[in-house]
Amino acid sequence: MDKSLSSFSHSGSCWISVICSANARVAVPLALLMCMSAIGLLHEEDTNTENEQPSIGMRNAIIAFHTSRVHILSAQCTEMDHNAQGGKAYGLLKSQQEERLLSINETYLSDPQHAEEEDLSSKLEMFKKKYMEFDLNDQGEIDLMGLKQMLEKLGLAKTHRELKKMMSEVVGDTSKETISYNNFLNMMLGKKNAILKLILMFEGMGKEQDKKDVAPPSRKTFADLP
Image (cartoon, rainbow, N blue to C red; front, side, top):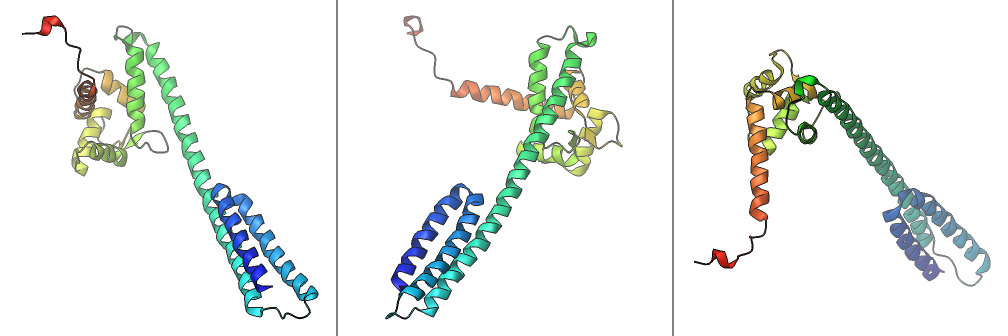
């Protein structure tokens, strides 16, 4: 009996591990079923076996194992739920932010003030993508922390005072601590060369140069020979 129970426990735990890796929601009730089956098997062998005395230690060990497995899988389910909900909420937030930015882009496209701006649609799309690279706050704006993190990614760490100065250049108000998308577009489309605008333009030129550097060399012709 000990051998059959040991085999049952090993195979059951293997199946639970496989299913848990795919879907912890399925694994929890399966673990409960395995625990109940183990107890049922113990009871059946106790009833049917006359000459062999069951091992109390083995019985308790198997029940304890499956019970602990249920607790572990329940905790994993909770963690997976939290991660899934957090990922969905973040994705929804980014989608909503992008929709708002697209609607603002539409107003700029229909604004006579920017009618003569060359290739405005492509520029607005590029500015939207660049704006969304920042870690935006809940209102979809760039705050001091978002600005700080972006500049650090670019290798341009700034002090708090420098960040405040850069932000005030964009919004035109030293008391405001966020950059809205309208502020951002006005900066990028305006003639004034704010520090942040120069940094982003320089970064953009660097990316374009990187693309050129990785491009395959042009094919030589007879005219290229010395």
